[in-house]
Length: 63
Image 1: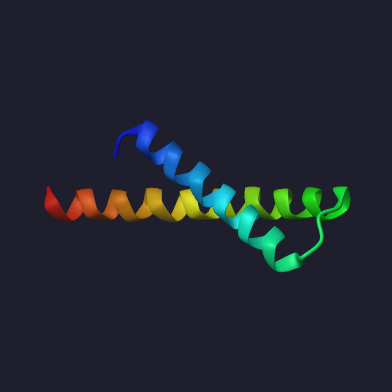
Image 2: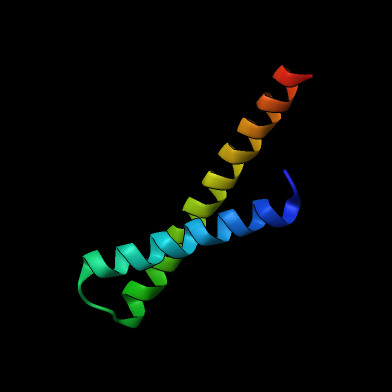
């Protein structure tokens, strides 16, 4: 997978997580925004690792 595509998928996943979390929270304050941003960053990192491992295994099977 190209690195630009990989990075864009991770960033979009993080933004979606943050937006959905803020909508479900119902209140937007500085504390909540900071907490959800931190959680979104962690989610993005975990999601990125999972995608990287998935593509790595997919490449190994096709080779």
